[in-house]
Image (cartoon, rainbow, N blue to C red; front, side):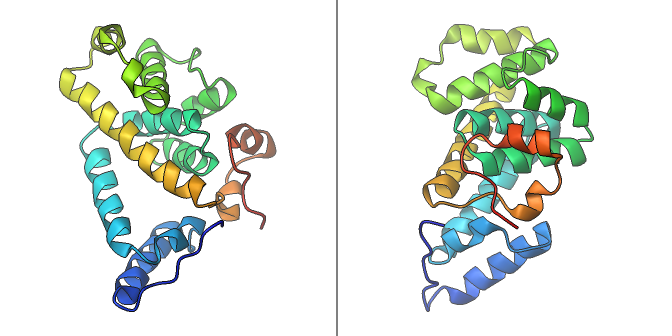
Length: 196
């Protein structure tokens, strides 16, 4: 990591509780946890935001959009974590492999193609989103509320990917073991995975 803030005396207990929650969720202390040592309030706010966005939309769509946004932001950590969620939680290994092999999403069905394109554009140049970008989503059956959810997911991912990558957090070695060598190589879009 590039930065490793110390817990503040007034927030050490709150950070320990949040870190313990992350450890239970992942089965190990994720590398990014230390970035929030001095600001567990930010970590908790992030957790609430992420869950609010994720739980308010279709889970598979959330993962697809998150992967596209994370890849556009060159965040290996987020691409790998959410690829594993698409495969394991959404039971969609084929889409995970297709998107890993062709990040443009060209091999996916039409709705997934426009979701991937929109998410990548929104993550890298949101001011360039125009009516035709939104119209492409509407043509695939998304309502304006659905499009808003996609925007929320992309924006949330941009925050977390920025924190992880600017802080120097590498994707966990334990996360890397969930992928074969070829897939792991294709998921490495920015910082490399941490060594075991």
